[in-house]
Amino acid sequence: MISHTLSNVRRYEAEEGDKVSPELRPLFHLTPRIGWMNDPNGFSQYKGKYHLFYQYYPYGKLWGRMHWGHAVTEDLLHWEYLPAALAPDSFADRDGCFSGSAITLEDGKHLLMYTGVIQSPDSEKEFFQRQCIAVGDGVDYVKQINNPVIEAKDLPHDSNGLDFRDPKIWKEQDGTYGCVCVDKDMNDHGRILYFKSNDAFSWHFHSILLENDGSVGKMWECPDVFELDGKKVLLFSPQDMLKKGNYPNGNSTIAMIGEFNDDGTRFLPETKQPIDSGIDFYATQTLLAEDGRRIMVAWMQNWDTILYTEKKIPWLGQMIVPRELSVKDNRLYQLPAREIEALRSNPVIMNDVEAEGVFSLDGIDGRTIDLSLDIRQTELKFQRFEIRLAQNDEYYTSLVYRPREGTLEFDRTNSGTRRAVLNSRKLTVEDGRESLKLRIIMDRYSVEVFINDGREAFTNCIFTPLDAQGIGFIVDGKALLDIEKYQLDQ
Ligand code: FRU
Image (cartoon, rainbow, N blue to C red; front, side):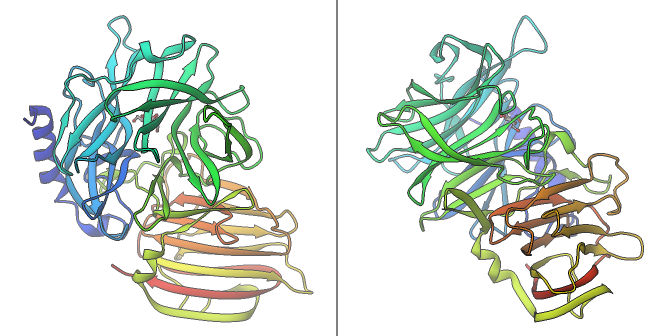
């Protein structure tokens, strides 16, 4: 039985979402069908398609009582909307269906594990968060009658009892199930909790996989743990970070590479890095594809820096282009999923271009492009290499490479935004003093930059009018440039 709340949402999103002209959406990035989107949820392969759910409030471009929106794709780039999957309509989740994940059960059903939220009777500001389950066929999901399946009584005694969310479920090799959630202890420190289950329905606490020692923000959100290239990888999104190296202030993201201890109760980190240092990136989630790839999605926006869209755009929030992950030398690498190559046309390839002064290059322009640049020093050294994207007489967005500092700076102050939110960010590139390799994926409203073969990533949104199609360069000395550009089409 579908509740009134859910059927109303489904009717509303079908009416209003289908009015949105495709021109007002990105070409290949997922946006909410209508209204607000935050975290990716339930990213999984089911019945031959990739399913991606998302934190969803359809009734406005603002965060509200959370639903799960739903979309499917065969190639990670062409999305088809399905009806909203979850609404806050049951005793266990009446104030919100927060983030979670999905797997396929032995009997072929699709299981969603999510955080059910209910307001405390004592305070409007306090919410209880517990883990819930819904099982379905890829379109309609039935919530378990015995929800919540993990609650406060299952937590370590020093849990604050309020912040407890974002279950990421997986199947263990022995056929049992594991899941990690985040909670917060009495000292305001986030932790990753590990639970186990024989059947994916009844759960018990296994261990604290890792806790914040106070040096990594406060609360942690959206945990994910998996094996990749012989190492264990832990991803999460810490809140309230202090600026440190390439970790930005506020809501940040972190990848740790390491091992589990011998009895599999603790994660032992060996290295850590920001997952993406751009302005618009948060809340990652991965899946293991049937072909063996570990693919990551994330919210291409961040709580601290939301760039509200103009009135004519009736959605807010996008997902990143799905990215293939790998681990090399204890570092996480990421590149756009290879499916993007099928969207390429009109190659323009130039090698050893002597770049100096202010110039543009024939055929190097566009707003939906896959652009690779290899920028090298010459004897007539340059200290500043600027690329201006989405440029016309009025607007541009710049990427500035300064080899002496080894930095890359993104700046959208002149991109046509009327908002004085954070508009620029600078990244210190490892090994960035002699040369720099960039791969820039532009869709209508975003610029995703993959640096040095995906060793670092830098994701930012822009809402420049779409007729600003130019790309220009400004170099203060002489550089050598290899360039490879493709247009991306549907
Ligand atoms: C992260 C987050 C999650 C929570 C969800 C609520 O962005 O705060 O921890 O489940 O968003 O929408």
